[in-house]
Length: 196
Image (cartoon, rainbow, N blue to C red; front, side):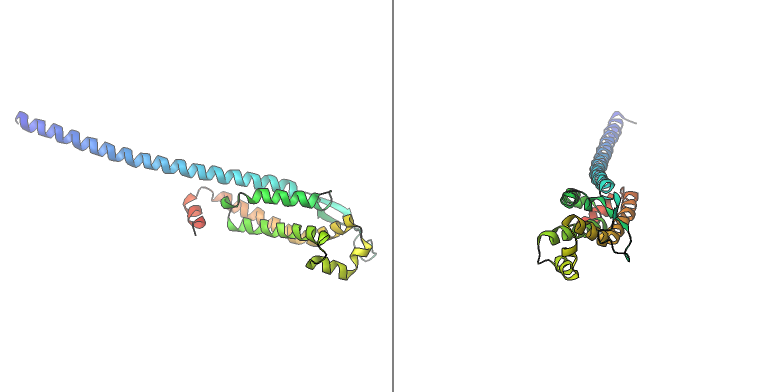
């Protein structure tokens, strides 16, 4: 073998080695970027679910209250969510729901739907107290409850009326949160869903 052939082989193998190394570095940097990007998305989603968990921890508190109607045929007491028992509880509950909904991009559609349903029920009660033309307000007036109950007792009673529906939404939220957190690592499916 001559020096020329030896030099050709050395240069060719060096060039080939450099091209393979550059290609591999490019591929791995691209994979690192993608992994870091996915990690940031997962972190954002986890932050959103932490906010949702915090909201549910305070919103889901129940309290047993005396039945404001106090009829013999009705139960003497019933459960309501605490937001129906506190001064400005409905306003605070609505504000808390809106704070959580600002993370709606990071939640599944089912979570946003259930939060929206809960918010609608809470708002419906609040609106019925101030807007006499609302549907719920008209139903309450027709039933004669406005003359029988003070405002606070009316809020308690409406909290009782909506209790089962809100509890259903809360239960569905819990199931969906578990399902979502189990699949939180599947960023590609999440990105496909939000890009639709």
